[in-house]
Image 1: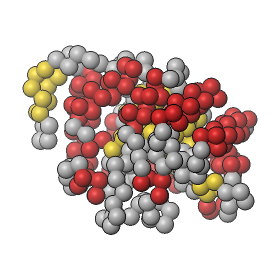
Image 2: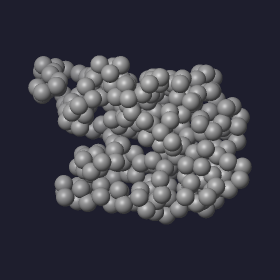
Image 3: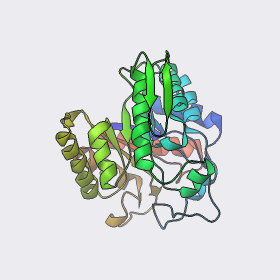
Length: 305
């Protein structure tokens, strides 16, 4: 199993020096991936509750840097570690411009991009970027169509219900051919079906492993039905724990717990078929020293198993 770390990006970690220090240290420790998420605002009177914990937005989310900018800086100071978005809220961005941005990151990193996309959960954020909340699934499907054409075709042309591109040359292409891996988030039947039908993998989150593996099996069945090779799909899982000094109750893991309990969970995840797990420590630490100490203990503990 590959092991990743969320790159400094929000809360107490919006200093570019933190991004540089942690990215270099994570690569030296042997981490396989650096990951970044996507938030733009924290509404004072939210239309939707945060989909985790008690439904309250984590206070660390009040300050959040752009994921592509953060990963571009990480790319510049590393050589090996892969760079992923989990998740980029893909519908906020015009797909032609998004294709250029992600192509640039893949080129700068010499082919290390994992393009992880989600739909988000906040209607307030959609309103702020002037994108309709309704019809998100259909918009995602067309966005994926546009990205794949731009990344693969010598002459790019698209005429769809939402986007139109006249026959054009878009010469800058990603290093990875035919395109960077596309990973999709989603937990609804439609979202899981889309992963199985057209993505290279699924972006899961921390949850009891029986639930995770049940959803993963649903994705694999969809891949089988679409005539795809299920063995080529990847399961990447994100952990956002609140670390505790005392052991948490079993039903609180992996949401809360000691470093040892998180290590045990990650080992169990590997045994359950998770291909990559990455840990986000920005909701439970406030300094890079503390973050790196815990990161080192985590990767050493998981690898020791």
